[in-house]
Length: 331
Ligand code: NDP
Image (tube, rainbow, N blue to C red):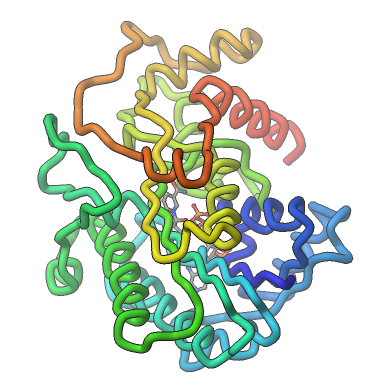
């Protein structure tokens, strides 16, 4: 079987490609340039005969994925902007997220070989930022972020705009299925902050993807940085959920909130100091290691239906830090 992974050069996209390859699938990845595809193969040469790349420069362009889906049976749509460097809310964030998803849905409907589609959504499409820390609320798969396009268009808070982009993109996917009745089955996944070792091509420690950057921000900091988001899942678990979301019968039509647990940056600093004593001098002083109280989450559906056993926080941080220190030494 041939799997199409959009955003194959990204942090999650690379891990999703690797997860399918390790299960024996052939993979076609979409990238924005030939160089990105070449660099991918250079980084993971063992897969060079099992992976190919197509160039999709603009995910929101008309018929963006029509060529890419040819002959594919499974699609994992991970491509979407995840950063807070937004100048034009619509052009930089909302359109690639929403229209990119719509383009993927349309391409899949036209290609009869496509049987299963997983769209990477986010916990951002579930939680309501205005209510944080939302003590007493339990977020589960059937909760939706109420953000609207108009609010997001006008907002000067890039995190709000990102959350809205994910919400509206996921709505676009489900609305498409409802109105167009395509022959493929859709599944969506809602991960929180994704931790774990980056496997994508990284050119410099300054151009880390947003979530690896959140771990790295603790290193060489004068003062412990505020926790950007207090819930996590390891990238290897998120990648495995994408695979199972497209291979397991039970996953058809499901939303999977996929949260391993809560954390605080004080714990990141403490775990790194304990496991990498030679790097301890680069970590800010931590007065107290604690996780403040906030909302609760319920990911029992993905645990039960797909048999997911979460990689624990400590292992995720140790593996992330190990890979980032190695990268730093090599770049
Ligand atoms: P990355 O920035 O590493 O990856 C994003 C991918 O999408 C890259 O391949 C990027 O291409 C591609 N992309 C972004 N914008 C465009 C665009 N306008 N046109 C074409 N391609 C584009 O981020 P992540 O791997 O972290 O994110 C992947 C997915 O996971 C996203 O859908 C994100 O919303 C979701 N997610 C991530 C979380 C996290 O904590 N990391 C948490 C929850 C959800 P290029 O490499 O060329 O820039």
